Length: 607
Image (cartoon, rainbow, N blue to C red; front, side, top):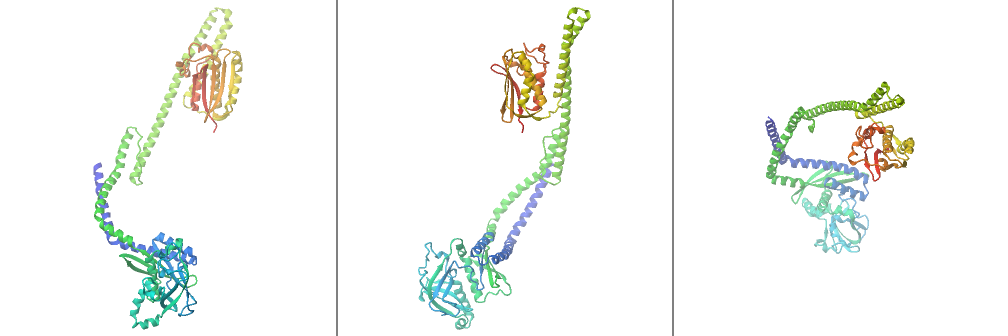
């Protein structure tokens, strides 16, 4: 059944992918290019509308306009420029020539003795070398120049420029090729050349070059796209000769082809802030889509083969991916039946399979939680039961001796034997009763710690002050054995249960005093270690055999020969201290030193 699901999903996915692939290939072959062109045109038109607002806002700021043109090309891959009402490129003050005419008012339309010629109309910016001179040797300030053209609407339109009249037809002349070519196209429309020159009178003028301005820096980029500038000059020629009419449609799109590359030209007629006509002229290349379409056609065979392999692999993977959660669910539920809740089903979808996976995971988590809680309760119950058993066994064992002593004393007193020692036997029984009372109290306290239900309440306190207070309480016992007490304490704030830590210190000091020979020393010290404080209680003059160092923490353990019951201890002090320190979660221990035994434990510093 599992194989059937995978196989069916594989067939369905493969068929669907192949169908989509066929639609994509057919659509790409028939409609991709047209759709790209439409979207490109719509995108550029929308961008030009936005550019118009920026143009009106920054009109007059040459640097801002140059920046806008460059940003427009970077964002849309389209060249754009602003033209005046006669088709001249705006803001060309950085690339022009000033000519002082030989005669004032020699040709109609001249408004003075100086003529300004935009250099982009007659030459390329690359013809200006790095040493601030033109590659054409006679284009320099102070040189003589002759130029000719036609008068349109009472304004001069320069067609050719040369050093002299004879140079106007030689190779080293400067020429507005678009205006010259347009003239050749327009003249045949008239009955004879005379009619043409009546409408567009020719002129021939001479003068001296007085100033030449060349762009620098980012401004040079405006004049490096010669195809774009040629289209601007061609548009200007059409505009001046009346072949471009923007009255019917102020926004026009023109198709243009150059070197087998298609372009779209956008011309928008607008008005500047003074109400004067202007034009936004933009051109974008359609070469990328032509190259992409041609390359796709050449590689269709390879693409189809590779895509088929990819579709087969993807379909198989996809079908296996859908079936995999079902297989995981089966595996996980089998483990759940065996009370193994460690495995979870990865939830990667939000559909019905994902919802089912989440429900199974939640069911597994809840079952695991309840079973773990039940096991924990059982373990606690076992621990309590073991504690009760150990308590009963320990009490029974430890009470046997004092009860035997008391029974013996009572028998002696009852029989009247040694009546002169009556007070002695009563004192012995009283001592045994006191010992039993201490033993039962310690057993109850140890059982409380071992039950697993006791929780330590932590509080901050000064460990040095506690140690000094505890040492003061044992001053008489220390003096009675003629012991020397040395303290090396520093005030450290720690977090612990002060009452229980005092109990640990009492047990350690009691042991130290009890098992230190007379006229020896006891050393109590504290030492800082990163996040903890180490408390050490060392007694001189006695050692514990190495094999007994770990056993001394056991209940009722007494090492031979000195650690006997007759010394007065219950044998539970160190076992109680061990449990208290374990509940604090801190390191502790005992070790033999060069001169004695050192008990130590750590406490966490206050945060």
